[in-house]
Image (tube, rainbow, N blue to C red; front, side, top):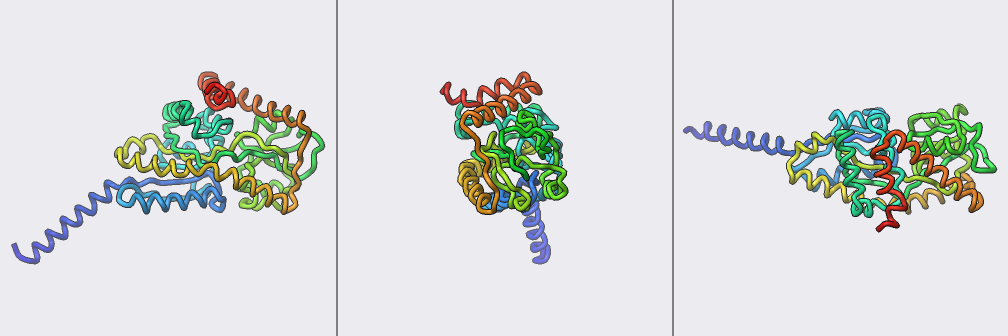
Length: 327
């Protein structure tokens, strides 16, 4: 064989090896339900970069973007159908796929305990069967929702108030007699500016990212429920990966979850920032506050169990305060 042919043969072999290596590397398309300037998404992008660095040759995540790529309330269908392989989203944004998704926000016990008491295992059973999804990890916890208002209220009653909601807090606002309006996050600013709404529900953090803090005057304290921003993945894609790839992705997802308590501190810092910006906290007496919290949790569970009479009671037993008392 001539030297030229030998060189060509060697080049061909190297090319085949490169193609084989590339074929073995799992390609994962990642999207998010949130605008790309939010702190959650910024952390997600950093995480994906760490995954790509540590998992080079094993997995590669391509971040395709937020709502400009996949509309907020289509994120669940995008994961279920495999349009994207992985997403960061709260369950409230994909209740159009299955109603149980919204139960994650009701958790009153830490995610670490949920992994011990069987809650995460049961969640994955439901997510697999009804959403063609794997529930990988919870990025955020200890990050409650609040009602933010443009006008002061003297009691915990939103009668006559038009409040922007996501499906996550609709029952809570309705329990407080508010008129609910479903608006994507990116449209809240315009709705406030045009007085289409009198307030909105949002987690304790994020209102500066969304540029809506200057239009906000009051915050109802304390908050309720818990922002369940989590990583989910298409089940078919998960099954298509090797055990080594799945183990690596789960390990990296747990890195996010192990830092979930960070968001509680971030939330407290966010409160201070809001207060300093002129947003006034509205607090009420102990009896009225207890009544309000009982009302929003009962309304939340009643609504969820009505939509899921089989899984609802089981998830309530695993996620509520009673679950901790039983241990």
